[in-house]
Amino acid sequence: MCLIVPLSARAAPYAAMVMDARTGEVLHSRNADTRLHPASLTKMMTLYIAFEAVERGEISLDKKIRISKNAAAEPPSKLGLRAGQKIALRYLIRAAAVKSANDAATAIGEAISGSEAAFARRMNRTAKALGMTRTTFKNAHGLTEAGHQSTARDMTILGRHLLYDFPEYYNLFSRTSTDAGIKTVANTNRRLLASYRGADGIKTGYTRAAGFNLVASAERGNERVIATVFGGKSSTSRNARVAELLDMGFRRSPSSAPVRKPSPPVYAGAATQGGAGKTIRVSGAVKKSLRPMIRPRSEPVLVASAAPKPAPEPTYEDTVNPDDIAQALAEAQIETARNEVNVGADTPTEQAVALLDASARPALRPAALLATPAPKQIPTQEVVTRASTSGGRHWGVNVGRYPSRFKAETVLLKTALTEMATLDGSLRKVVRNSRGFDANFLGLTRDSAELACRRLQARNISCTTIGPG
Image (cartoon, rainbow, N blue to C red; front, side, top):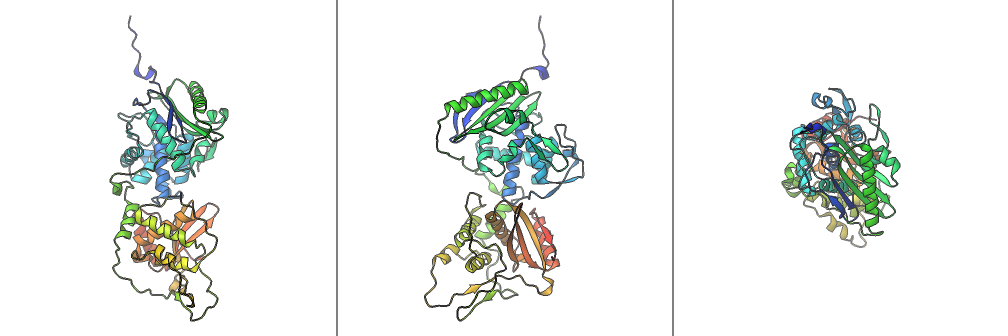
């Protein structure tokens, strides 16, 4: 007698891997290179790209995303978004990371790349750049689709990159619940987080074809281990197996080991990586200036004295250390600044203001200028950038909020180089608040501010106008 078992009822293939997160050393593996259905582990890549896009200035966490019919129609698990509804990107990220919401994941992909298909192509480019050699993505959420497959090894690699590439966002995965804008959502991984000492993430996944999947990370003292399971029979048995694997990892990993962070992704054909290529276009502007000669400003910005006297009060409130400005300019000339650079200047300097203002002329070498001491017995030249109040120039534009002052200043510089036609002569200003660092251009008329925003938005650069007061 032959018993035919329906495909949906068959047990999903099992695969597992344990890795020392500090070194990347594999401590245990079983079927780790077998291509299987990742289910909602897919959202790890969706979130990785979202964090990358925010860091690169492609999109702001506060950007209001209009939900498409396609996103709203995704099956559960979902946040319950409606077609035409607008919601901030930060809430979509929380819903995808914590609740594993399919509608939120699709909305993220469409917001960043314009369509889910285009976002899937970006997911595959990113996977290749991260060394995920046996992964193919077809969608942003992980619901079963022909050809949408990954491996335990590739998902472990991705989990390690999330941990080290975006530590400022990693805390999302340890929240047992979070505010997702329209409701508070509970973490699909809350049972393991509550039961296993040191567990702080990362992502669960389940479909009939995949079984119960999980990538988990835990830290105890100086040790950190990542364990991945594909094909669990239930969430309870899967969690128990992951706990066993984490225990194995802590037993096998050395008590102390140097942290060797994974290398950041290097993209082949980087001009297409960011969708519209915002970062690449700005970088190109530095290498080949669109302005062949220095144009005189319509408003004087140089204040010089024949003898030393008190300096005028700078209107640029958030000046930084000159060495950090030189670093920011160098980073802008290459590709995109990373938050690994430590910027913590406490003392404002007028020379720093002058260098930041002069950065729109790529031919200057700020590091060399800073290294040259001023001649003795020559009065110090003081340069102050001022926002004009004539002609109704009380308007400005905001180009995003960023996790560090350095990142905000870098985005301001790149944006100024991209849109010199309307922003030339404006004041670049970073304003710190409880939620981050706002990157603003001030000293514009209403018409020029609105024009600048239209031109920036045409390049898919987030921009909002700032009115008087």
